[in-house]
Image 1: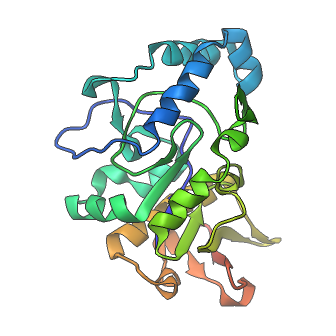
Image 2: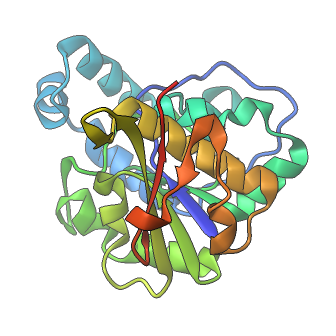
Length: 251
């Protein structure tokens, strides 16, 4: 079974000591896409990413500095480099060495630039959301560039079952030709007006479920139903065959 999460816009490149590391499988593609992005001006990046001028300047500097042969000081393991809400739930810095070894085989991070990442794959600072348009010989979007390769990579690592904890924007890149069964959990809050999905809580819960899978070495889909971090519980009455609902009373 393979859990899949999204990356984060926020990144943290403070060094982490005594960690194993690996090289992304699609590193050649990342270098190719970075070359295309390097040609974009601050104005181009601002328009493409819909970000402020200072953020566009920062990301232009990142692509200008992007190297095909970076040293360790310019890179960081992916699960530790991303720092958004999902990674608050994952809490990679508190996972044991045994947990991280398991995560290498059972957790993947989708990426507009790197395609598919293992937790300990070393990456450089970047921002390139999957849904953005970046023209290459393959087409005008990153979806066109990656085609069905991301889905094939996930299938190869999944052993037949994928737990989709990624956003729609990112999991769309896996395509529609996947052979694996895909289970998509939804995390909802129990309110007086009914169940409601709240972005911050849902993102954190996705990371927490990935952590639950890694720490408990969950190998079967039924094992997912035991997820109870932060008060969430499986709702069989609201779940379909592959679309599963977990709810809680918000603390």
